[in-house]
Image 1 (cartoon, helix red, strand yellow):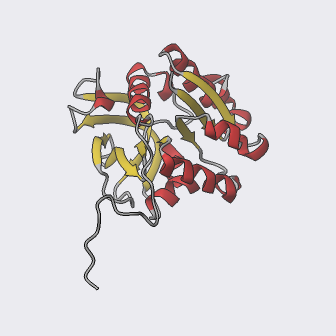
Image 2: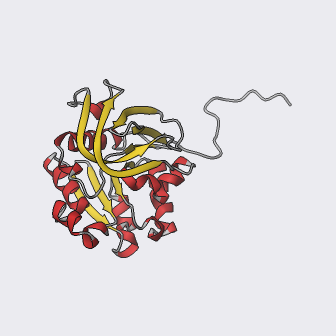
Image 3: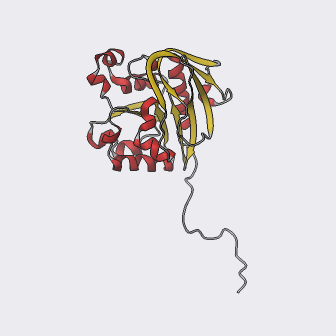
Length: 241
């Protein structure tokens, strides 16, 4: 069974009653609930827990980590970011949602500012599938339409994705690379744009399906981790002295 940890700041839910009404168990609780229903072993972790909720024990028992952050990126401890970064390089999957584009962990894995345009106006978003054969979009039609979302617009300062899965169009005219897949070391990273806290995006069945598919895609593959460093030859060397 795939083990998933859903990490969330859990700050908006406490400060904004609108968010609390939409996600009474927190964004992390809502995501963990539909992942459990999908057959995963899903747990949660939040910013204000010891070690930001990501102890060695939790990280070492996580196949795929899902990350939602916004208000308090700077409060995540650098040593926790370093541990998560290393776990990704070692094979753990990472799914970064919405405003997690500015998280320390995503920026460290991308090596760029990860900046973008934004506007909160409750406008329509249409996420077009641009990689219809990719496993992340299994069961999804040509596009996903959300009646109200926050706008993110290009230019999105990220490395060119290894695979681009979704491109969004917004009612105001902007477009955005909304589903970006990367390989980092032995791990996989997927950035998925939708999920502003004041809209019920994570209750949308298509959005849930994408996240479920992304967990399956990002899970560590069953193979021996490559050995790095000084290496002995596989064949006998013929050395000319």
